[in-house]
Length: 338
Image 1 (cartoon, rainbow, N blue to C red):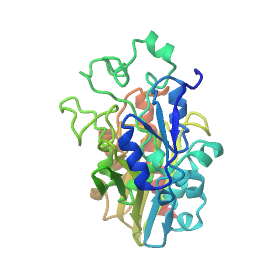
Image 2: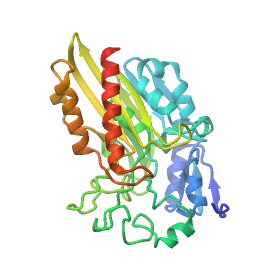
Image 3: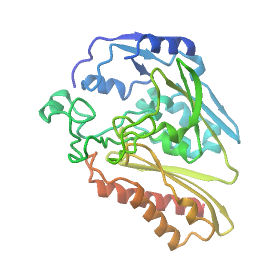
Image 4: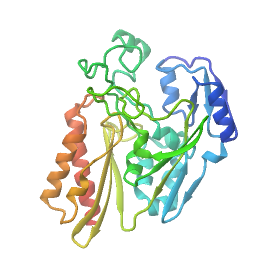
């Protein structure tokens, strides 16, 4: 990696000041923990002249949790989230996802907002400047071809790898956003637009691995909120090449409800596979009866249909899709039996 270039750090103390600074410096980058951003700066992937630090904004650092509702500020650290006793008790999937991220040092620095808005990754993108130049760059930077899928006609397949998103998606979370035109709240699922469809143009609601967030100019994520469902059991697990300081080959969050011997609710979401975190559609058709071979086969079919098999990491794409299915089956069985 190269040495860090010169840049200026702006440190607002209020949310209004943060939004104003973002408006004054539209080409700036937000700095929370910097565990992903600083690495990308050293690799020459991005070169912002202005960094706006979010950690001094009190409004972004709160956690409000009870058995019914959860609200987390964007500047809350991953360590704080993973260790919060009420989150561990009432929202175990969120605490487990936070605890699975990288290693202790990164979790001490990394923030909720940073992980939810994590830049998409690819073996042709997350490399040094000289490596990318030798390979004529890629579609996500200044190149004209996606090297993962050279015949993709201008579609980028870089993969979203944040761990918190699938955990919050299965809780039907909402995201709070603030910007120069005011504040708004949208379903967390609507924040991610990385569908990577060759038969669709890039729009504000349908993007790819390069255009993967639905944030408008000057907007920032201020927090995330979710509600609990009585009787819901949840957990998170992932596979990675190394057991720490590593992004997921695939990560899966599962939530389900059991009424006697009947599976009455099933929610499954993945990260590390597509240009967006994916909550499986169609799992409601698997509910209503026992957890039997029909349910397992149906879950496998949904995974095969909705999880991409593109080689954006050092593992083959088909391996990642198979692992995703295996992890999902194990978690579903474990939660149903618990």
